[in-house]
Image (tube, rainbow, N blue to C red; front, side, top):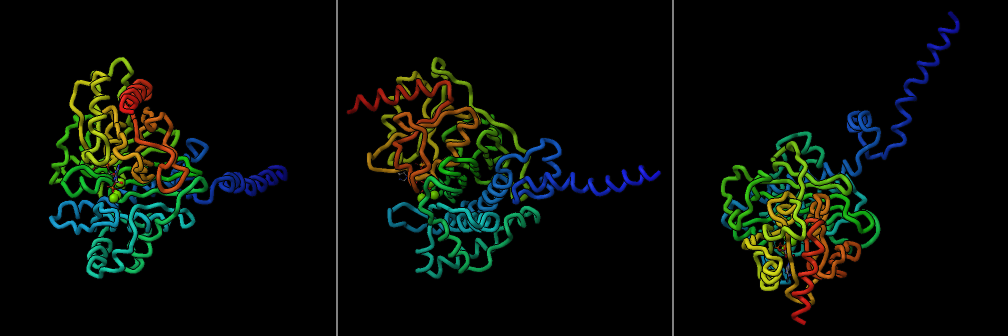
Length: 400
Ligand SMILES: Nc1ncnc2c1ncn2[C@@H]1O[C@H](COP(=O)(O)OS(=O)(=O)O)[C@@H](OP(=O)(O)O)[C@H]1O
Ligand SMILES: [Mg+2]
Ligand SMILES: [Mg+2]
Ligand SMILES: [Mg+2]
């Protein structure tokens, strides 16, 4: 009887410890709900699960704002110092994404394309963007709470916008934000993407792309004229990847995340390229259409190229709707920006692709706000990348 009582008391003391100790070993950011659902099934937390979840919801919320602007006739276009366009949608989306990151990861650095300087000089512009930011939220209260809820006021919005000024680099956690990639496409009524990537020590770990004008269906044929989405019906895709965990797509929603599907590139090897589809920029100033056409011809590609704005190109080849993305330099001095490539690079590689520059070097995100160590982009299924790269080099060398 005494022995049974001692055993019972010992069990009563030990039981809570047995469940508590593993929690001590987990990262502090790991929530109890996630712990019970994931830890019990896999015994270890999935890498970057909180970062992925926040990034997906943040992109989804920002996309609600960009879609409102997309469907308006006057998009509040302003010229930047470098003469490229920026709209009220770019500013608003960036403020909302940074608000979500600051709420969840206050110590992380952020590299973002836009800054608040023009809004500080133009009260009307500031008020217009504040109207958008104040009124944009996810329609799922839990999802909205995850992002920290609404931005406090218009001045705080400006402070948030300016927090994307990190110089980047090889150390620590750095988020890269392109609030609207393909702004020219956005203005033309074409493709654009809301882009967010997380780098750890210069390596992309998490990538999320929101593409409001791509068809939801991964099997939908890739055509040049897919920007004619005026109703949103059947359109809007959220691509995601975590390093070492593959890539997914899901429908872009206005609230909680939709169910995801794994995606992969088509298996095109060097000998079956005749059937391949290649994508390139719409803007001739952004990539060399002539060189790209010569390369396609030498590869035996028979279909015409699909010209599409933004990192929607990376998402499209990652889900096998296209196969190859070529972005050959027009000007030798142009340095690609990290926010134009971070998410897409990871999504394509996690879907079975390879992404390098024209010299065959992997894109190097560790050297600041630009890809200063790289020239151009060559993205293709891993099995055909060596062949594509060799033809890229043959065509470019012949010009020297
Ligand atoms: N000269 C030059 N060469 C290469 N790239 C350039 C150049 N100038 C601008 N940019 C960047 O191009 C980004 C959009 O290019 P895309 O290929 O995605 O779209 S497009 O079809 O060319 O419009 C675009 O991104 P957003 O500004 O976010 O739209 C720019 O960062
Ligand atoms: Mg821009
Ligand atoms: Mg861009
Ligand atoms: Mg942009």
